[in-house]
Image 1: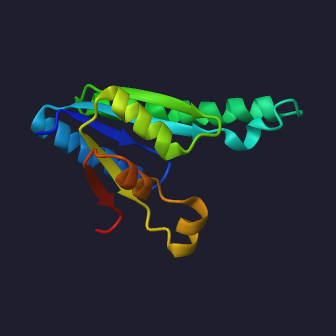
Image 2: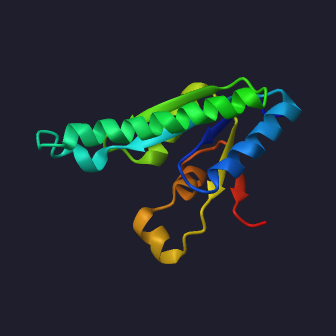
Length: 147
């Protein structure tokens, strides 16, 4: 059975559903859990000397930290002990950062969400789930928005 579950979370509407599925799995298996949120700061690092850029970076990190704090509170209310981590990204592929951290953690299962953005949005934004499925040997539990 799975012993170390890894859950990357964003600010999307499916994140709550992903976290709920991970909580159920952890409670039923006694697995360890790491929940991670990546703050993507790549867009602002090129103009770091410009007026307001440092404040924008701080604002984005604060938004990410607020999400991390909310996740910690939710896990605590549900009686689940977990590591919750914020990763700042300054230009790496998000899937590579997630995979590196998951490997460092010793994850043996990803719990991921599918946003079903459509083919054009998928072409523009790429697919983190698809990249992880292609680049990792860690099994994936895919949670969708469908009822």
